[in-house]
Length: 273
Image (tube, rainbow, N blue to C red; front, side, top):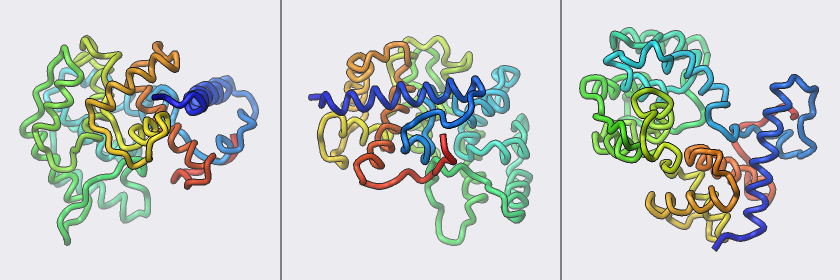
């Protein structure tokens, strides 16, 4: 059962976060919100496509000019594993996959003291003694050699195909992010479940637990989470959003609630909305 007060808070987060985005895009002077939590902490946008990294990705590695390239799907997997524009720009779209050159570039970035990877996603650690750059690029060899076979009519089946391939470093969460990109391209744009399917992440699972008054650690599987995300989309009157964006909002609402209820803080601060 959805807790009415929590549903109101969730709807407030969605409305206020999108209002902030709109004011920012109109170049309105700060503050864009009177809410101190929004003023002091960073939150993703309501729509994933409005986030800065995704905007860069859509202009860069996800650009339509690359859609027909043989390495396009593997490049999206690698791109979201690294998920940092500066690194991806230095690497360039991998029309020809050159692991040695990639590691050299990433090592150079790291040696200069610059950030190499996103801070938003967790990458599975490699064996002791194996450097992260070698681990990530070494694992990429598996999906560049044998890309997943997508089902153009199904977001869910395409996600499952990535999971079933068992690529190192690519778990259900990263696979979900990859699918969220591929659905914006010719590869999955016509999928029947484009609006109604999303992979459940750990943050969105906590968001669902909050909305239902459960312990935040209550385990939710993909099937259960999918059903509840679809219900929330209707209950919160968010049918103009695809389920991927609803999933995203649930994760960010959990971060907001954490601060509001004194249960912790998001990792990223923000310099005054």
